[in-house]
Image (cartoon, rainbow over all chains, first blue to last red; front, side, top):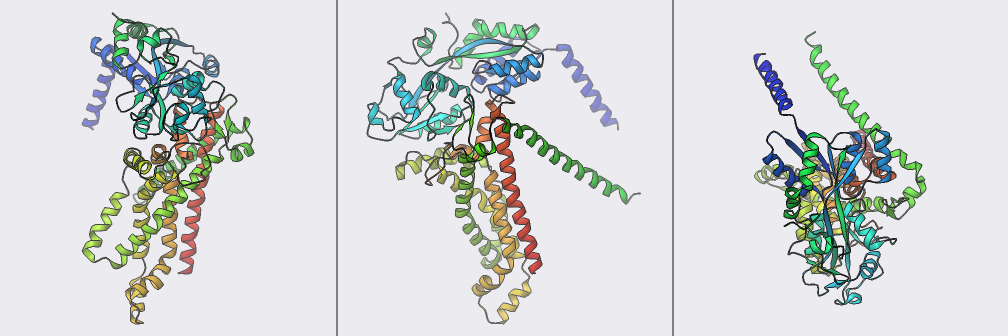
Length: 272
Length: 287
């Protein structure tokens, strides 16, 4: 009995102290934005004592749903909010406000042994829609192409669909992987494969290709010359106030943008 | 009064459990059935194109269902004979110390985390298959089925071993008394009389393979096509749900379709489950 009372008292004190130092920010959403959010949250918490930020990734759709339902303060998203989602939000009386926090460039990747260096957008479209099936048609060896794509509801897929495939459908025979990490592993382990991944994920195990003769990098993404780039967003529930406003200011300021650069994504401007 | 209390507790907790299950069922149907507002049942089951993110979405689930059946079927083809041989060995022929060692090992293997197996399939098995047989990709139906087979072997062999162990010693003794050898006894007496148990063990293994998610997500390749060869990449229902649920807008036809996929999966496993219960019952009647 006394033990229970002590535990209850402890919980009461803890919850009171939680209230005293107040600020807790909950973030949820895209796994693409997750590394940025995680790193920014850690830096921000270290600089602002008493602020607690919990970050989880469940996908852009889940994040935006959480904003609509009011169960999160900030939703990370690798795509802009969709019409239906805005409608659902308005019906529930919330209004998600978008903030572009970073850019992501998607790079086509192949196995390091692959001699191909550069593909045009048209060639990529033909490969992904299944019209070109051999590497020799794009200047490589006489070998079949193993096309690797992302599952159709990921933000990365959507960007690829919009910029590369346009109205075409991705071939149903394409291999589909469920995450950016799985994409990297799959392409690194298969010498016939071609895939695509965000610039922050790419490492030496794969070879990034140039697109239309342009190398994908922070500079070419920002000046618009590299064609496969997109914005990454954080949505707040209504116009941000209080601690959430401070965090968004941090995210968009030099400090936050340095965090973006350190995670391998493209900050919104070139930092001095 | 004192006697009634334990009974009441058991009753309370078990009915709470049943209630939770019913609630899950209700939820599954409530979220899944609205898909029929955007496609007909015919399109859903017969359509062979899966482009759920398009507008309007194309929701043909036939390749997904075919893939689920193909992966399950092939994995059982690979795993069940193995499991039964292991079960017969452990139960009938292994010397006592070896049996004492093997049984717990089998039981422990049943808890092997599937994500580890999926990872092995992705990083070790797939590149090896691709290099050795010069395939387009090692992430395919065969790879996934092999791994699922490994996952089901301990389950099936454990249950089958129990079924064999439950055969009364009298039967064996009688067979020996008639001059039968150990092999004849096993083949003609023990296995037939344990057959219903063995069958239901196999069916439970099939159910395990059907519902497994992680392995197929990582090793099956994920292409939504009807497999024509065992080296085609496939996309079973479970991996589709796991891969797409996180990023789909809630309440959209795609979201409903994924829940409906869950309903289909539930019906499939339930059928196997009922089948196994029926086999078990039949067996009891024979005995």
